[in-house]
Image (cartoon, rainbow, N blue to C red):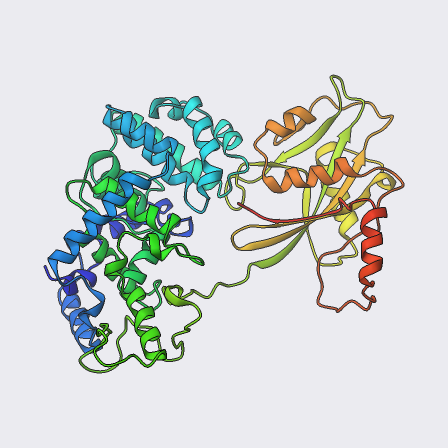
Length: 526
């Protein structure tokens, strides 16, 4: 099969998995561009021919491919030699390399790949270690409760990943006899939450299947190595990248090769400050050659200077090159590739939430938590009672008080105090929490909570399945003392401030004599 024919064929497994269940289709929203192995097409009769015709009309240049088998061989050898010397010592690699049982090895890889979606390696290490200590086998995870999974996952973000991981473990134990599927195709077909990338990673690393994978790091490496300036999110470029990955993967060491490609993108071929002088495949990198060509042209290269190859399509513009509207920026060098994807800013929402505390409860002060719905954002986690609010909404207090009373009965409205705000950014939502506090001083402690609610001690709160945003809300509550609270802050509005900016000298004096303001904590979710 030619590479041109391959890049126009969609994987049959992806179509089937979306028809059988919805969960795996959601994985595309998680950290990595998900992958698997190219398989036979399932396109209707005549459709493949029309697709090929469109492709021929596009006049794509073979400049962006690996045309010489010797280049493929050198790429594999150089990358694997570099990986053997430079690879990071990570707990999931140690566990997979030292595990003889294939099912346990695949489970160890599966957990790491799911955790690494949209999450940095440094953050995942501790979570992965705790997870494997608590549930070292598929059987252990299958017997755990969703509450336990959410509790351990708390703070890692994208909580649906943990839920689907447990669902998959239960399916393996209850329906597949405790044995993991052995190929990328069956992994993607049979396991909830396992998409194209995760299936390929497990199959290659745990079972040695020669299947390429493409995540964000691999996209960057391949786009630079083959000077692909078109939008990597487009169907054409995406399919080409998958085909290149499949062409390059080392059949003798597929798992190591895939990890090496990702490692190269994570540590050397980085987004902003690539270390090209340390790249093991620099001699095959068209982006680096483009930098050299531009340097020669800028210095008016003398006669006899070596020619540097560039794209020369047979007819019309090349659909794999950057569009004419995005010319080469000499200040960016190889970071001209890949083309930056325009990101939509997260939509802004506001919520009013209240820390309701019983200071005199038996066994120590307790706070009220309620459980979120079983679907949607932060599904199944626990939070302080909250209501949706409008920016500068005048009826915020009344709505929040009604919500509190629906869980805890009659409450003293005058004691409800506004303490400040917390801004927490999820992947697609910038959520501003208006933080309130209400302490039930002098009242008979409530010992029983209605279904869907809990009274927890402060120690229990910090180990419960609560989100990072709720922990920040609680820090605002703990940091406030009567008499030192600043005026209420509202959700951001577009009206410009008319306050005069203090002079640098005044700012310096304020920094020494003004206590830190704990009423506003801003960060981005991990």
